[in-house]
Length: 234
Image (tube, rainbow, N blue to C red; front, side):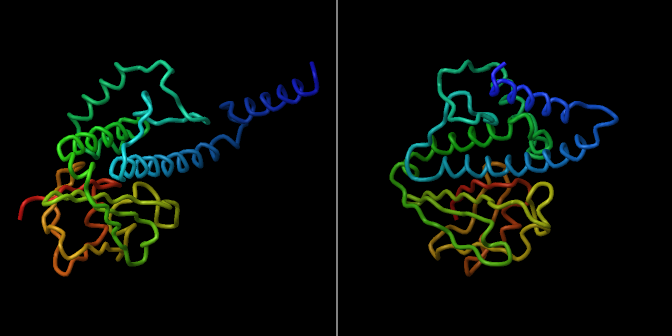
């Protein structure tokens, strides 16, 4: 074997050894706990990126087959075989469960596909908002203001709003980033002309924005780590 081949074989052997389950392998349990924590943060970041890609100005770019978690170390392409039956089954299954179940089973990737499906349906129903609508960044304030991203799109009387976390690693940020435990006093500030009544397309929850236009993030991200809000007629 060449020196490079010998080196590659030694590295492969080392990795196989430290990842082999055994009573003597004290490294693996610690590694798996760390891996699960990092993987969950990666999942929440992916959901945020997926939502923002759907609501930002322009046409969202979705690689065929990337509706679930995409773990490639390079850009995916549309030439890879896609298990469409699996994706269809997960999509049908998502329609029969609430978001709490999707969060519990986040490893399947069905939660990402659920977000894509809801966002695309919204784009189809309100094409004027996403084709010609104004883009409005929303300001955040409070203890975790730097950890939330929010924006609104609107055209005429139609409004859509997206809220998503970022930088989800931190002392209080264990588990799903939901509610006051995580978001503390963080709140969003809305323009004076935004509608007061909204529905969350992911959870079917209703949200009312009180005067003078400040709403706690904890009230918006109460059951699901991201929000796609649609304004209701007043």
